Length: 220
Image (cartoon, rainbow, N blue to C red; front, side, top):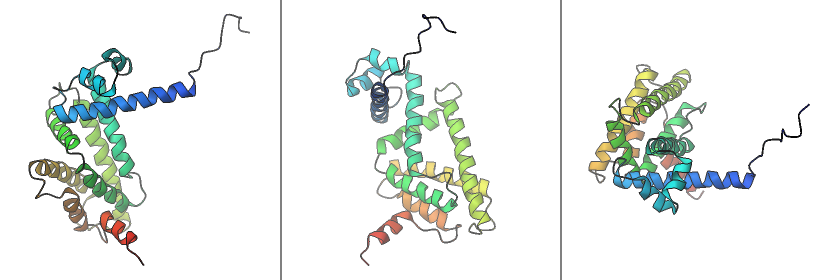
């Protein structure tokens, strides 16, 4: 039996939880914008707080320091990417089509692409705050893409001379390299088109999702 002093834990009202969640998302969106415009090292906590319309203390209540904020921003960007790319789809081609759509979306957010390219290069240093994040991210992405290519192989849709793991490594290298080239000359490089053509060269009956969308919109 509990004593009268053992009061049940106070539960946070759902409305307050939703408000806190919305505030965190607003902070992450603002931080992504600030870091994309100014870079991680130059973009400040104050800049992010000002963009959201809160105090620095209010921001630090949710994210105790800049490193934790950066980690959360990168995870937030990954959540956005996962909403476009169905990594676990039973149809490996569906995963690849999602990557093409992601490349097309990235072309609409150049600041985010620039931030990612800069951070991924800087994070090769073991003492960089995003070092562990990028190691984990590349490991997970390689594993997911290897599985997608493996499903395509099982379905008889992958060229016989292509190994799923090597295809995954080549895909990541191509996407990262295309982003750098695109940042240098956006008139010459079409990231989504190059990626689509790459997949079509060794995946049987691979369709560019943008063309499929255009076909669906055509009058019958």
